[in-house]
Length: 154
Image (cartoon, rainbow, N blue to C red; front, side, top):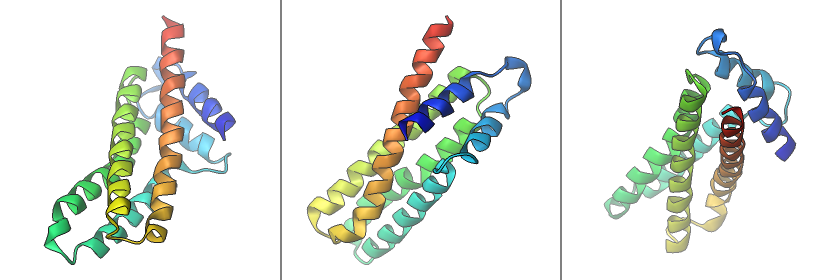
């Protein structure tokens, strides 16, 4: 999987600035068609799981602040990833990917808090927690590689 990530970020950054703002999205989608992991699909699946978990918690107003925070971070991570795919420059791509990473970290926090509190059974959180961790690893490694590549260009 690390090979896919490194190849993806190298692929993204080996572009000509004359090719327009949709180039990032084109290259990411092109890469995802040749790998086992479709990152956009994983973000959609995570967002859907977050909505289901939030629905289970919605029965009590006591959990409303946690539900709202989980819903915001858990669904915005994928939206921010899609924004990164349409970035207009390398710096814009890194910035938007970093926002995605921060939203994923927040999502992981809220999921761990829910697990620790025991208000949802651990086995009901396992898939969302696993997905968020996998996406954190992918996006985190991509950010490291992108920043390194950007420094190497200067």
